[in-house]
Image (cartoon, rainbow, N blue to C red; front, top):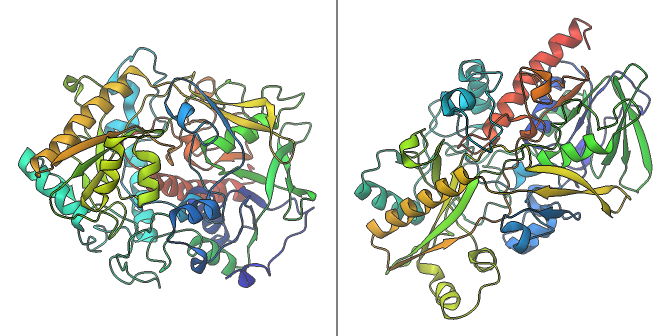
Amino acid sequence: MANQLESKTFALNDDNVVVVIGSGAGGGTLANELAQKGINVVVLEAGALHTQADFKTDEWDSFQLLSWLDKRTSSGSWRVARDFPNLPAWICKTVGGTTTHWAGASLRFQEHEFKARSIYGMVSGANLLDWPISLRDLTPYYERAEKKMGVTRTNGLPGLPGNNNFKVMSAGAKKLGYKDCNTGHMAINSTIHDGRSHCYQRGFCFQGCRFGAKWSTLYTEIPQAHATGRMELRPQSHVIRIEHDSEGKVTAVLYHDAQGKLQRQRARIVAIAGNAIETPRLLLNSASNMYAQGLANSSDQVGRNYMRHTTGTVYGVFEQPVEMFKGTTMAGIIEDEAHHAPQRGFAGGYHLETIALGLPFYAAFWNPGAWGPQFTAAMDTYAHTAGMWIVGEDMPRATNRITLNHQVQDQYGIPVANVHFDDHPNDIAMRTHAYQQASAVYDAAGARRTYRSPPFPSTHNLGTARMSVRPQDGVCNAYGQTHDIPNLFISDGSQFTTGASENPTLTIVSLAIRQADYIAEQMGQRHI
């Protein structure tokens, strides 16, 4: 695939191209959708181009291969800042972005989650806002995304089989009276689909699917875009700055290429899909005399309202072997707690999802820094252990934010991102409730004991350049178009107004499809 993607090129001074920064769920999808419409696209990806054969079943080797390991710093009261100060969030640096390193869960947001401010009301200490779009607005794009991604339990595609990890969850859920426990809506082929293999249930697949059964822009959107002759992929292109003209419109992107040479790509439109940490970092680092606070930041909202989902993990140890690592990583889900029921003591809801970690990662994240009899007992019973992960809606807070740490620089001399996060009381109340319910599920299934693990670096990074109706409340409009600069777009999870209780990838893809339609329309009318 690498050789096949090297042929198409556009000139550095071609100011009619759309430059997409990032090639993951948002950037890769947007690039393909635009290319299919006959629009020329240059994709700048900081990571290298790999093939499926490069994916590794060893979690540590895979981590080194796919992860964004450039230095970061962190602050705040969250435990992650203590346990993983230079890895506060887990994102990828590779063509395909986080779609190479994800579980595949593809859930639609619920109607009430688009109206959090209206439905939840004033939540003290939270910066809640309604989305400028509704579920009705996004539904046709959810449908297109589900077809594109081959999401199970949609469009006649069967669900994946349940492994032992799911069977344990299902047994406990039924005894507790939960009604909505299943093997999930997964962007993992349950049958041969889109020219890709079905899932072989080999396990250890969180960090890349060697068979291509799990949807990834690496081997779907990017090759499809390339086949149009309208897209050039430039891997190992580390963007450092976006330039603009005297009228304030963006005109070019500065980046270091694979050889470390500084390049300038002219652009008609720039779309940033660098994840909710690198996207605000780039906007802030592109400050100028005209945009003293950073690009698209007249509202002072760039970098603010960082969300990562309310998370935590519960493990149950059983008499008989479970071997959670066999089969898909997220093999089951309980959806009964995903509604808004303030009588539980918190706003919003959460999902309980099976999770499977290999023994090295299990040891690292079980209770970072722990040692002693309880730790060794947990490791000794690994094969008998089932795992369940909490995914809940956390509250946006203006003080939870990405800023530039001018005291620490990356390999290109650019200030690194500092990630600051404090749990909101609502987050803590939700996590406490979820811990209790997840433990109860395992107890009901016959667990000998249960363990609760603290949140670890999240792959769900959201909200640092959010959508808003009013420019003063956010960074971009309902199409991800920044309020301040009409030819600058946000194309990743940064644009989320709130985080909802669902895994974000399906929504990111749906928004990218919708954004492509809008960009094509605006370009056709010469508005941008």
